[in-house]
Length: 59
Image (tube, rainbow, N blue to C red; front, top):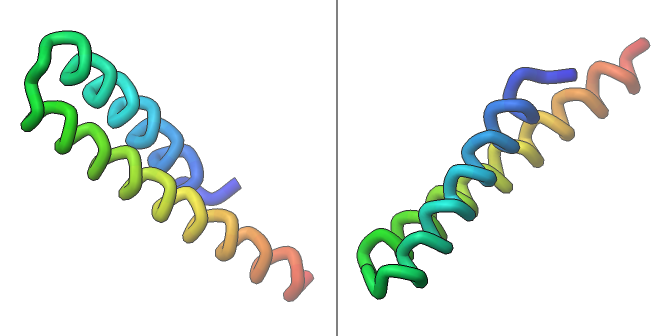
């Protein structure tokens, strides 16, 4: 498993928590930061999945 998949999942979870906290407190900036971080995490996770697919294909 590529380390990007793990880091991406952590970043996605952190972003979700920030987004929820922003909604709960009415903090639009925190909510926006959480949404961005969540998206970054999804992208990083997909990069990791792609790297794993390439490695598997080469085996």
